Length: 64
Image (cartoon, rainbow, N blue to C red; front, side, top):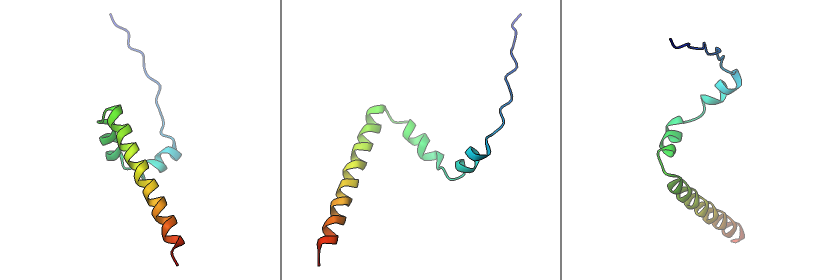
């Protein structure tokens, strides 16, 4: 005979529920399909792009 424990009922936190409506979970799922190495590679590419944008912005501000 197996005894099953009744799990406590979890009530959703209203603050978390409010934030969840603004989160695109499809992007999270797609990212979780990647290997850790692929995630790091994407992050590195994003960082390079951000740095390029920063340099372009600085350059544009220096132009008369």
